[in-house]
Amino acid sequence: MQTESRVNVEQVVLKKSELLAGLKAAEPTLGAHSSWAEEHRRLHDESFAAIVAAGVPRLFLPKSLGGFETDPVTCALVCEQLADSDTAAAWHVMVFNAAKLMAAKWPKEMVELLWADNPDQLVSASGHTPMQGRKTAEGYIVSGTQRFVSGCDHASWLMSPMLVDGEMHTVVVPMSQCKKLDNWDTLGMRGSGSTDVLLDDIFVPNVQVAEPVLPGVPNNIHFRGQLYLCPSRIVFATYVPVVFSLARRALEQVSALVKDKTPGGAAGKVRDKNIAQAHYGKALAKYRAARLMFYDALEQTWGKAGEGHEADALDRADLYLAGTHAVQTCAEVVRHVADIAATAMIAKGSELERIGRDMETLRHHGFVNESRYASVAQVHWDAELDYPAMLR
Image 1 (tube, rainbow, N blue to C red):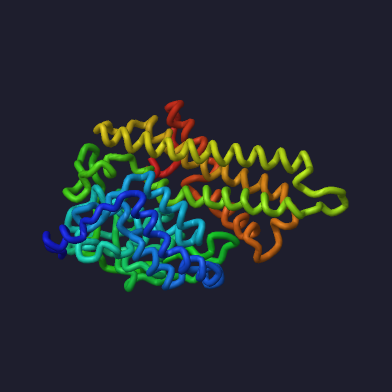
Image 2 (image 1 turned 90 degrees about the vertical axis):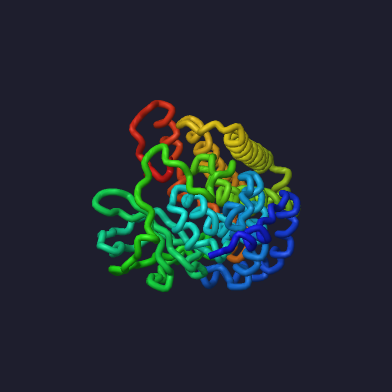
């Protein structure tokens, strides 16, 4: 376990400018291995090492464990900047930090087991399909298949919800006890390595399980800072900004393309066509508005936490709306670009083609797909919620 003196040495809280500047060292490596990640359906080892060196694993880790406790706006900017080099690498901002937000209510011993000796250790998480657990005298027997476990090729641990006698627990299991299924083969976000993971009657000691937490139970001693007063949906800061990079790069690419592109069967360049100009104007407005709305929601959430205000249902819904709208609107931006670029959008191997594939994959993610607009309405109208408790 990490000693107090070692914690003090590693408690370096980086300013926003310093953290973003530090990412510059990682960008050449990420760019060089981006195509490799696409082909092999996981992040390259050197890319993984580069984002670790850049401090990505420590963004949402408590200071007492050697982390940065970074504010959500800075985290979002880190994610967006990384996505400019490789969307799969940027997705690992979420892979590294989602579990650290969830750990606020875990027993102190469980948290220290994972990160006290290694703040950079990856605990890969997914909440898609709960494991099944059976209580024993000394622990639990765990079985099941967890889906879409991004980054599991580089993870030391798997984190998953687990049902025990009808109650939802949280379990962490060493990846050495898990079986990875080679079934992540998608059109987009291929380098995220989001394969399924199988557990077959694995014994797990009590220290690796967090039981259900009653309302009003305080965070464990490591999670008392401003960041951990934010609602759980602050996790949007770790992956939603990928879509801003995709939308902006799509707009940049098509702006360069129209200077010389002449549509088939027509006279004059695309840049002089009113319909193309209208698509671009709409796309630019949607991108700017969605990005401003999202970053404003993060700032509002952070400010309320700093004032000691606990987020209510409407606050959480506002944050959920901003994240969902960002993803769905940026997908519209890329479709506007496709209407301008036409066949250039589907030229295999082009940057626009990959942007389109990645964006289509992201807009169907379960936490931010189009149906989540209805989830926001359910909160505003006091209607029955149709989405999992972990998203509330």
